[in-house]
Image (tube, rainbow, N blue to C red):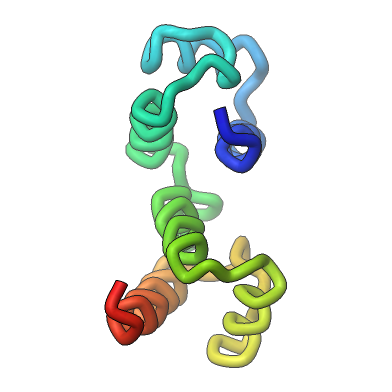
Length: 123
């Protein structure tokens, strides 16, 4: 399992305020393993799909969703941007570089903007 993917899983676990036992039970129920280190890529995506579909996936009621955060992370990787570049872009065009404070609407606008950049590159 890729270290970046492990980090994503642990970020989601923390954001959902899951105890270690709850987390491992979900991991086993959804993927069949008790440790994220043992996940295949398909199992990782299955777990992320589960997390973004849960009713607790929003940071706040009107805030950015985990699904949006996950998708933004994928777009950032496709663009091959590091964290600093991504934060500078958000600050320059959206006047806010802290993703956790975005509303769902702000996050949607950011997604559309990043998709347009990708489309412009032909990827």
